[in-house]
Image (cartoon, rainbow, N blue to C red; front, side):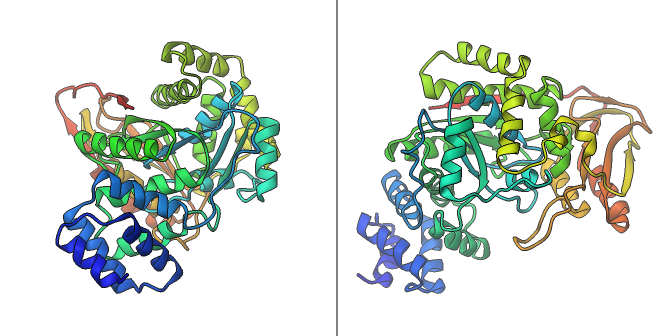
Length: 433
């Protein structure tokens, strides 16, 4: 078998065989296929697409290119969640303990933030002492003992995806549906959970700004997961507006704690309740309404917050910071962003607001960049709010004083004002099964 022939077949719009796809994934992962040939195939896929069958074979081959996490030693029903990424999206910090408090096993591997989207691992590492790297036995033991573990992705989890994604990033082939599906689902399948809920974001802060594209992506991922034998569904959620009020690592931990204490912003709370309820429903086949009631009870009676405390303690974190979030260090510089307009906020460029948080130090442009856990944005006004000139819109937090003027200008440029009240925002669009 020759890589030349595989490239030619896809260039000429033919369906690749299972053996050809596996040959490509194995060869590119072990280095026997060079970047230039892999890039040629990726571009041919970008231009000519893949069938559902091809996509599922590619996904499984990528999942099997490294460690496949075996959760058979976990006593109970395993469930996982994956978000396609957004701004202020700290849902995993809330949803995982909610679901675990109801008796299900959440063995979750999460990623780091890159670009305008934040990463769960970075947020957890803002808790002093919290270990995001556990060996396999401790990972399984924690899940069995307290029902939950939240760690960073294994160094050898779907290594084919790491190589292919890096190549896509520099060859203008990121925006390709079968490659997006295989990238996301290969990691979820390798992570081992039998039940998976996908949180597919749509809007200006997501990778799918249009609802119809988000629905297609969700359906493709669900279908691929089912072909791999997983019990899976997807929820389409709004990312036209940052989720919650806090953007930034320790700031998002603080806000997650507020929700787990049955407080906090209503939009974040509602999305987390919905995600948790659908995860429980996947595990039990119970009605969504019953599952929602159980989730709400876990927030009201404190069991979800207690589960988060157990998680932090089990992974070496200082629980005192969870009990009293005032202990988190604050950024040295703060700056209030005031409105120069009166009227309604009619829209927000959520991705650009995420980029403002990068300027402040809360994220990374490249994987090797360091993160300032103290930096971030607290949003005081969002789409649909009535604003008067001079009113407080947001507060910026940073240890980089020199970036504040540009960060303020960028934040203001992210907002659009109108004299008329905009239509109400939907938080949840639909469920895809």
